Length: 311
Image (tube, rainbow, N blue to C red; front, top):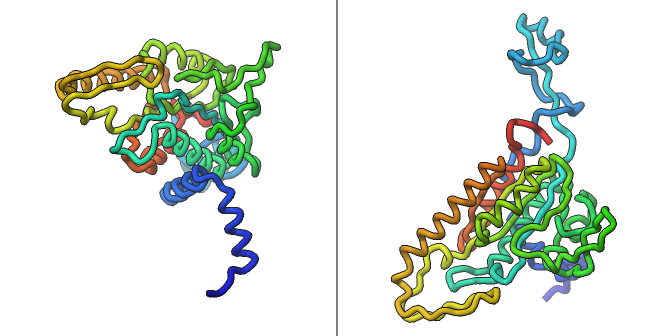
């Protein structure tokens, strides 16, 4: 058997050090990137994009008189938006996110981390700046950003804290609950929140409304295990809470199915209503489904800010 070359051996050593999460996220991002068309959009850049006919409401200063003379109709010269977005990520890391039934291959937390890291890779490739809401540093786009995001999502940096500029004591990310903590994010920043969103709707609304009030545009991703949606259990079952919720013994679990599904549908409808009121987007994802579809939808949502305003 031929021996591996020094280059091959070095490549294997590097690959062995890469966390499985990063490898999987790169694969998912590569799959989705094949269907994307870049990040070009109208805005205040210097790079020419296209001419379009003049419309009522356009400033006369934006008319390109040379193109207008050629076509005999007023035309506007549009440029490509070149300012990088600042995108913040947050995922629910409470015990309920560690649930995995026999119908799924990974936990809700693992899928949340995969989706967030994959969207971060796509955004970084497009020139955007990405960071974790629980980290102390601002979003960045240097060669170490992916490694820092991976370590932060996997909980490898427990010393990373939020630096409170008001002079108060820094708060560790370990203390966060099932909803993102209030943070003074910059106006026009984007925030991606991945959670099972099983908290009371009033609590969800209160936690996210503060971000929206500061001009932050957000994207909610509800991640559920298939068993949480369809309740496939039957017969005598003992259900135990994972967050000090106690336990309950059900003699015929199948009798709960219709009422349970109704409650889950109501929860989802309430979350969608919250997103509409805030001007945010709302996506749902099941851990037994491929991540690529949700990732593509999320990328499209990030590329289409509300009201056509580029940022």
